[in-house]
Amino acid sequence: MSDLRLNPFTLATFAPEGAACFAYDREAQATGIVHFGIGAFHRAHQAWYTDHAMSAGDRDWAITGVSLRSGAVAHQMNPQEGLYTVTERASEAASTRIIGAVLDVLVAPYEPEAVAAALAAPATRIVSFTITEKGYCRAADGSLDPALAGEESVYPYLQQGLRRRRDAGLPGLTLMSCDNLAENGKQLARLMGEYLQRSDPALLAWFEAACTCPSTMVDRIVPATTADDRDAVAETLDGLRDEAAVLTEPFSQWVIEDCFANGRPAWDKVGAQFVADVRPYETAKLRMLNGAHSLLAYVGLSQGHTFVHEAIGDPAIRLLAEQLMREEAAPTITAAPGQDLDAYADALIERFANPALQHRLGQIAMDGSPKIPQRWLETLAANQRQGREAVSILEGIACWIKHLRGANGRVDDPMVRDLQTAVQTDNPITMLFGTTGLLASTWVPSESDRTAILSRLA
Ligand code: NAI
Ligand code: CS2
Image 1: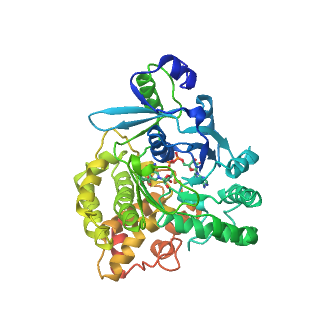
Image 2: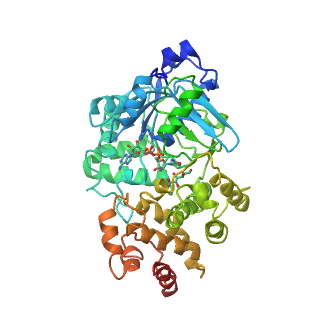
Image 3: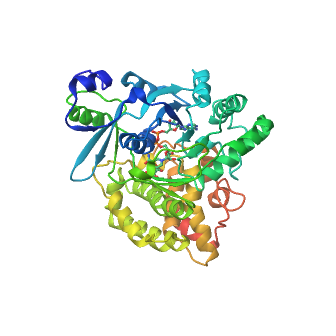
């Protein structure tokens, strides 16, 4: 296997025929987007849409990525001058595209000045985020946790960049969350406001007047890339190595609230949807797709499965997932005009069953504490208000508690210490849920709920 890396020179020299390629002059594009959390999902979703938009003639939406925690992605992408590939895999075929939309990656802790300059550059119009649910530094009640929102968080970098824009008389920015949070734009606006209220009240007024925070629903299943994946991509690239390769499914969906401070790419020309209200789409996605995903993860791991397609292929687990989606989540969702939730559930089962993705249940099982409230507890609370039980989710909760007790090995969760203390007590359900639990929500477990969970823990 050659050590030659994919980069503009090797691309021009070897022009691998097995991959489609962007169709615009990268050198001529201004950076219009700064993206925090340039992980696998951003590269397979927003950057992929932006690449298509610029290939279709849109201009000056190149991306500067920012990593807040490690230099890993910078080391993968900067030697490639930002070039990387997206490979779509379905059971019967695969297709690879070389993406040119990302120009460089900054590692914030080592180059804060470069991050501030990127945010304050006149050509920058959008700052976007895929920093995971925990990256927003929320307390259990959803407010900003000052103990988490320290200098290593996203907030001081945003403050610095916005302050420079205000002082230079530049337009505001669109702050666009692309994380799996309910009403992600509204949450980001509130959290940024809480941060500035404490740190820079004068900037708060400018932020509220000059910036916008649209909500988005984002959907594309993007498992973490493995070494075997990279080797397979190198074969497609006639031996060129792409250390930043991402692999995903053919399906992709992006629904965006059309509320931008200073323009936006023509993402709607390449498959995205601009709407006035994202909520019907995001509620369906979070409660049906993500709710079923977390169920497959914890129940699947408890049954010895490793991948999503194995868990959905287990008849007993599939039955639980179908019940969760169709009988527990769907009745709590106010569908958008034309949105067919039954057909949506059919499509999700098919997507979960895609064996080519090798999507690890362990990846989905991570960070249960910021995921479960919007994926399961909102559904439980809505069913409780209607006098209905959601027994599939209760099964999932029992398996999550077993997971927290170490049944599947190491537990990755920002609240792991408190959670593991809670599940070792005689009363884990009270410690975890209800209005005073670690995962406070409006769902208050009934005696019947408790019996259903505890009977599965025995
Ligand atoms: P990844 O692990 O490839 O990237 C995660 C990114 O978030 C990295 O840049 C990391 O540095 C950053 N990050 C992690 N913890 C952080 C923290 N506490 N503060 C600030 N930054 C932090 O993961 P991937 O696949 O890119 O997913 C990221 C997010 O994208 C998910 O959490 C989810 O919200 C969203 N998403 C992911 C999908 C997927 O299938 N992978 C699909 C739909 C949404
Ligand atoms: C998954 C999501 O890791 C997880 O929690 O449920 O990343 C899921 O793959 C995406 O939301 C699909 O759009």
